Image (cartoon, rainbow, N blue to C red; front, side, top):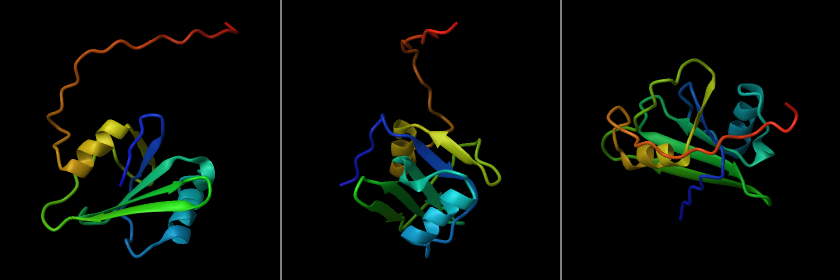
Amino acid sequence: MLSLSPSLSYLLYGPPCDMRKSFDALCGLVRNELGRDPLSGEVFIFLSKRRTHIKLLCWEGDGFGLYYKRLEKGSFELPAAVSGTEALSITAARLQLILAGISLANIKYRPRYQQKTVDPCG
């Protein structure tokens, strides 16, 4: 069962990805294209060209985990800010909406308290 934790970092890879890629090839994309360490514990998200397939890659401490989903109808919606070869950081909640097929364009977030961080050096 897939569990998405708000404590993890989720990075959506911008360009379409060949879904035939497995662990090693996806790790190569993470290292070479994104300049990130696949062993960092971040969750890396890859979508196919038609956005009907999605893969999530994550280091789980003793090996890589790979979640793969193929839609029989419809497509996954990308956040509006995805472009080029950059990765877009998204929240676990937004990823759950993408996986559930909920439109991201009409989401309205209600105000919530956010604790301000204090810089001890300044």
